[in-house]
Length: 288
Figure 1 (tube, rainbow, N blue to C red):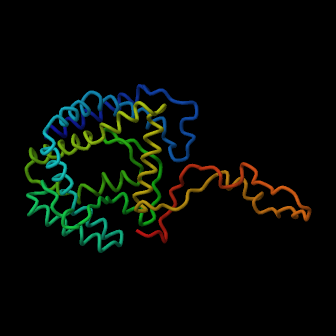
Figure 2: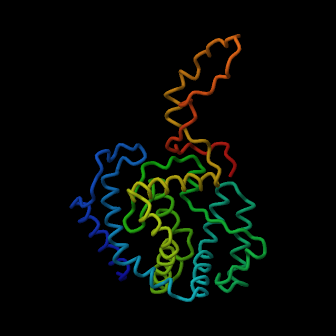
Figure 3: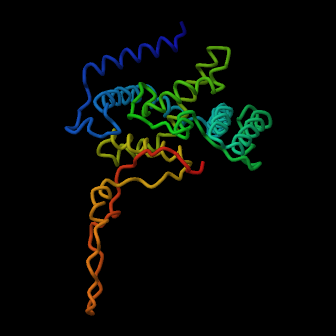
């Protein structure tokens, strides 16, 4: 059995111990958000992931950013290129053949002319970069995201994304078709560190600005994933206040006075003034 698999098993076993100990501080309303019914588990797993990140992933990312910028750009481009076939397949499954063909051409150009993806030649040739995954594809097909779920090590997810990204994507990602385990796990590890390094500026901002990092990250993740499913143009969110005031909105308006006088101004609190929590509606006729 490989060292990487043993390490992963050890991390999962440690995560179970952390969850059993109930180390995270829970707010009094934990689990009441319909998007996050497993909040108690999720917060404990979030605490474990945070400790793992502080001890291992973040220090490696801080070392990684000290590499010359040209080296990091080359690696980032190459890692992105490995996802080219997956993105093309998912665009095809999402009924976007033009984007899928562009992704195929982009992968071919960058793999050859761009020297295994080190140089992003395709962008200069007008081939736009996309990033699609099977979690987004399931959303396009009408699958609801399901409860929010914090995965061990990998972090924020949902039931739909956990199935799509961790259950299906490994069969679409070229990284997992490398026949040499040493190279396969080295590349995978470097990809994880590279992505963590790209998040360092955002991580500092969140730590400084967010009163509750867990809620901030959860809400941002769910909003971003919903936007990706709709290619950045999600339907209007439903405001609970709109539903509560629906009967009032339908009530007949009072008869307008015929006497002259100052114009009536709109009273505060009319339906539509507030912004509610986003609801992940099914993609129907939304353009992809």
